[in-house]
Length: 171
Length: 467
Image (cartoon, one colour):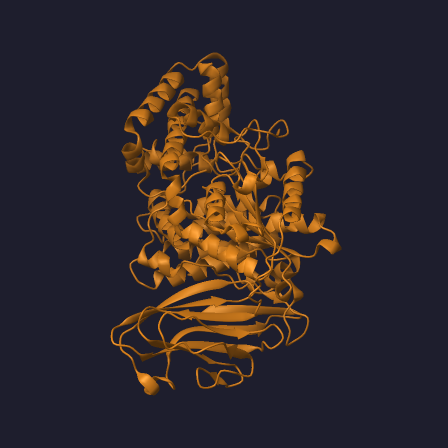
């Protein structure tokens, strides 16, 4: 019985959310630890100042070279997530700024539908690349708290087509 | 499954409600899509914990796509709206210790002992776990297993760990999830006062007021929010609302609605184990089977497991939602479905006035209540409000509607609230008003928010709300 219970407790393995990159067929992560994990700043290195950390840009290019149609949207999402974790949470404007970032992030994320096999897993994997250490995780938690309770109307396919061909492909 | 609500901070309160002005199709340059003027059925989808914001939006969008596929033209349009609840779990370890240090410790010790004794088939499982480690698995460990940042970061990028280490991590995670369930078990009633539930309740009421039939779909932790929001509704309002549970850790679905939970859902299984150990109410029983092998380790993904293409669970969930619409009736007290609505309320000071500058130049306020686009319903001079400015679908025009306030009469500082509703968005703004300005403030009201209606390509309109 104890063994059965313990086997059942494998449910704890990935927490309470959804599937991850491996389980759902998303891009695998392996190999050496990227240097950006040990960054001493939340922002990290962005040598071309495009709002996307160098290591994240490299991850997108490397992982999705066979799905180029998704890359502009993934880059936009990476930039939005980077903006989320580098917000100045000490200012009164942080709430409105978080809301604007979440709005763009949410809209752009739906552009992955039809462009990658498992858009939810892709979004999760990208998030993990951007928020890749404890310091960034804590910053993201602050952003997450600010947007909790927000509502988002799901866009129709028609709306996605219009958005994703225009502003949603801004990167 | 779980997150632990805190009381609203001032900042969170300012962000209380909804946003996201999706571009909306229109029938003509001056008219809004029937999707909004006759909005049809409404699903509110409430995500599970550890689902990032972007993922949750994708889940809601895919659900909408699926529902639109299975509905007939006679059934009309359906819109899915995500009510997001956060992944962040503030002060989790402190909460666990506060709620039940003894029980948490017991679970921890039992799991640790099981891990240390791992052998045989369990070792095989541990090896499988080790080979299937993924980012979020490590991420969950952050609270319990990462003794140091370096250790955490190293583990996070190592796909393979030793079987014994994997067993240890699994054991710790058992304690983690069980303890999390304990915290929620104690704090679940506090959800009734959370920002998320307040947001949900408000959105549901607005949908009811627009004459929509409403189905609430909770996934995992989202079921707690669904149940609480439903309880906030009056009996009359509940007649327009039904609920459907997916992978629910709760003991009931609001209104006696149906649920779908896999026998192999390991998250709900772990919660059930914790509830048995603690005496908290157990989740509803499992009543469905995931395909074998499960697409995910946990058998607990909304999109990959429960809504997987061609699965029986997907058919059941969509059928449950459709059947739920059949059980509810639209409200008879439809307030209206304006393209833009601005509602002003305030406190006990006598007079605060709503002002709107319309795209065509009209200044709508108490002395000019009918504009080119919209209408002000009343001038309240006896405290509290509300005053409503409404632009109907037929009269909305492109351009910017500038919403402002004038503190006309009062003796003390006042705080006013302006709630903005557009077809896709609802936001609330608070404005501190220090001193009454009388007539002198009528021509220069305090700016609150701008609503810009633009055309984004053929047949697409966007409502942007900017402060």
